[in-house]
Length: 129
Image (cartoon, rainbow, N blue to C red; front, side):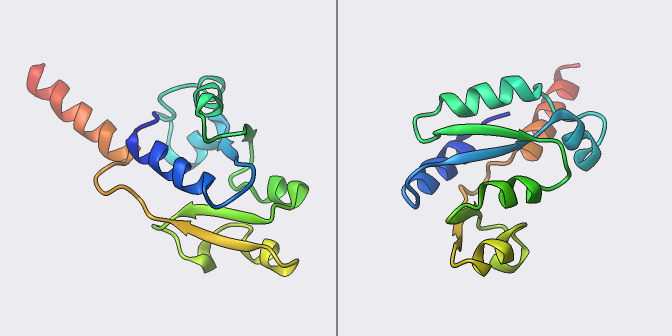
């Protein structure tokens, strides 16, 4: 589920790089990480929506639990993650830094998260139910 927080993060990320490639977990990967009720939308639809955003040059899917294989293959100059991470906890950060690349953290929009939106939707459904 794309929301204002995602769009803001991607727009800020775009300003820090020449080309923005967004790596997305496949459905199987999301289920392993988030549980059987996720994702809400299938990976093809998520990739299509992300790729349609003006800030994004390309959306790629990865089936592993982390994008490390994709990072090794692409060897990006910069990895961008939300500021809920630290430079030391960004997957692939040490690898990118090993050849002179950098890790950038992008400030998040307070109050917006997919998990929070799903929980709020469940609460509203229970009230109406």
